[in-house]
Length: 261
Image (cartoon, rainbow, N blue to C red):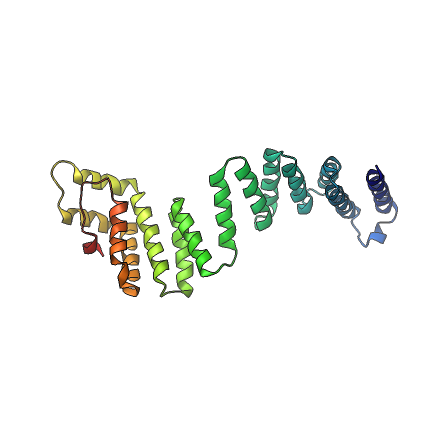
């Protein structure tokens, strides 16, 4: 009860300051001062566990100054902590529309999405956060691997290109770049349809298969990346050949990966 009384007194004092003495607050904009003051009331209420009062304070603050990012984010926090995850998601989304580069809000939105069972959307946001933040090499490679695993091949390729600007002699990065391109190629229904045509009827000629693969730009770029990785680390030959076989498994066409590499 004492806390509620203190909050009520704080609101009355704030209102009086805004109406009669806005200059005391050091601002020429009473609305801005009132919105900020209500935001503080919301913070205080949230800290002592009075979530309804906090939510009301944030709502009132936003009605006065709709672009108050802090009030929006904190309202989302109140909703999330109250188990109102769908409402929190809406608020976090609106916050990011106004301030797209707020990584903290992205993380909160990702957490809410995960709670709601929308794991792919949650993971996409986490990847976006990871890409935006500086990381050591192992973290960056993990990000690329995660992108490839989730089928985001183009994103993975862009990331490897960024890394290679500073690490041009890193065979791990070249190999991941190859993985991304080969993944992109084999996800191409046109390429796979051409291979399917070749395997119908009699056994396809290996030269025909190579011709189809080499004309696919993504597959060709993947092989070139693997070659670069091999040049930097010749011990990878067997592993890379196996990767090509794995990506093309399901086809009766047998390709000597060593010929491609």
